[in-house]
Length: 180
Image 1: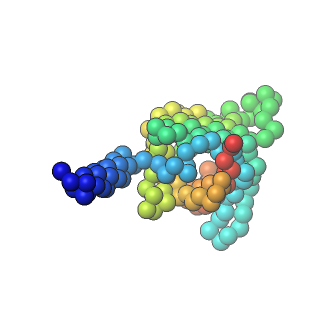
Image 2: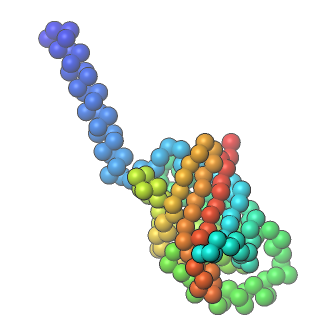
Image 3: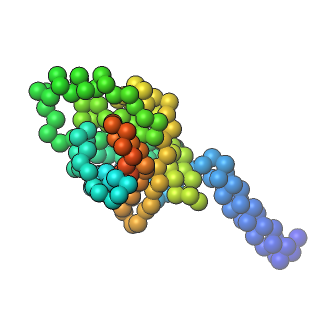
């Protein structure tokens, strides 16, 4: 075999390897590398259809939060309303009994929202879907909740439509910063 033939074969193998890796990524629904990591919540905004920003009694506008995406396709999220105390348990437990849940989001119980599971990414449409394996609200287990996302450097913005507990349609926007 000549040097030219060897070079041609090596180039062809390289191209085929790149194509195979890309196809594997598409079939598996792998995550964009930029999404992988730990994220700290910067802000959480709830907006009505008319553009009015409203408060959220469940988590507030400034909850503490962490969101983790790993390379193997697992996700974990925790959000906590500031100022939670043991004294709120009685009234909050009564409220928790009334939660019916919605299909499009995880529920907040006692000022806390937490779940873990797996995730898939539709890069073309900018959607990450969390597939919940366990959650603080038992009614959320088994849900798949889709979120629109965008990345800009170390800032992750997640946006989704949902409803408040009284059924009012809203858009939630969560801004996260990468933990380093």
